[in-house]
Image 1: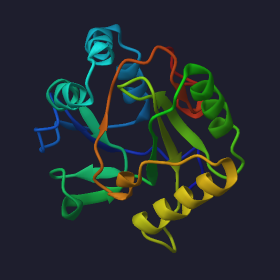
Image 2 (image 1 turned 30 degrees about the horizontal axis):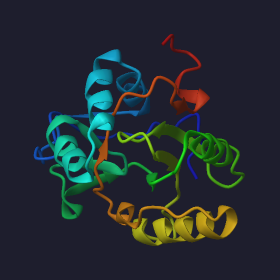
Image 3 (image 1 turned 90 degrees about the horizontal axis):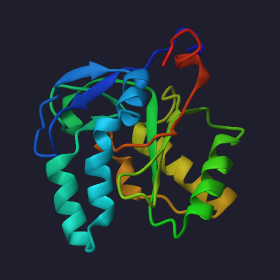
Length: 192
């Protein structure tokens, strides 16, 4: 495995909305952290969470949120267009019924002894979490690793995750979150 001090994952950022399939630039976790905490994202995120129907929310997210592909750098958002894998995996936990349970799951994931949390934030809808972890792809594929983590989370914590995240080019929308977790190594020498 790559030592944490020398490993700086890079991945594709897509501006505007989910209809944009061509990356705008390549970025890292500190840049995403800064985007998540940027107050300019608050209006869109608040508006999304006030929409009453799931259909309205899905349409709004597609049109108004930029996103990243945490698992790698792509020439376009397509599994066959992967240039470099970042050694990151996104675990998406949806439909958490209340704030207390969301907080409890967040604490549980951050204490997990096997997976190094790189970034953890509240999903755009406000009732889910995006957990970005470091993985090693020396012996298994991205999809196999995803399945193993999914099984581990279910068996260990009885938490079900969104299985669509097994896609290496999975889009992860970037909402406003005033208090995301980021691994200390990314901010130890940088004033935020």
